[in-house]
Image (cartoon, rainbow, N blue to C red; front, side, top):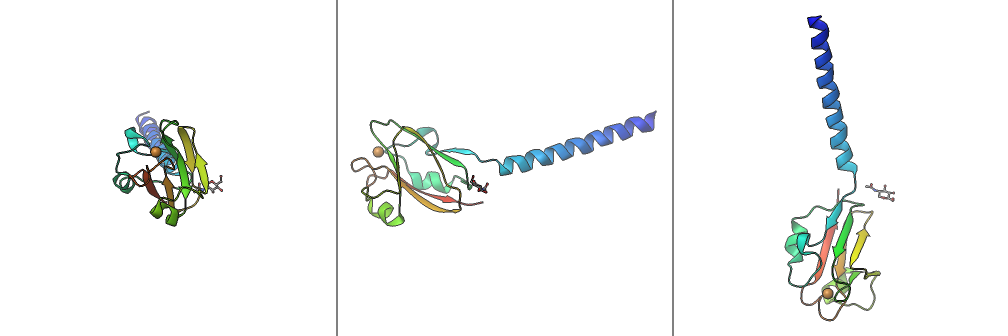
Length: 131
Ligand SMILES: *[C@@H]1O[C@H](CO)[C@@H](O)[C@H](O)[C@H]1NC(C)=O
Ligand SMILES: [Cu+2]
């Protein structure tokens, strides 16, 4: 009886350990939603360089840009347009105020606000996507 009971509990431990591993693997594979700018969102006056350097973004994670659509937008641009804050030839333009932008491949992506001089004022972010 005693033996059966101890076998039972050690198999329960093994099952739990197995489930824990599955959970960890599943979490690793699952794409996350990343709030750009943290609680501040997409806005003027935030240092997005600091934000980006402390934020992990993996392929297929969704970047969530939250902002007042009357004041801002989001443009995915080339590095050169990012550097120069050029807003006339974006790869894509988003303006819902709650945009989800997903990059499926590793790489560095450049996003700016295309309104007025916001980009020049610092409303721009370079996001490095990697595993
Ligand atoms: C990302 O999504 C694409 C298209 O849905 C898929 O082909 C690709 O394997 C995914 N990549 C990762 C790392 O999950
Ligand atoms: Cu703006």
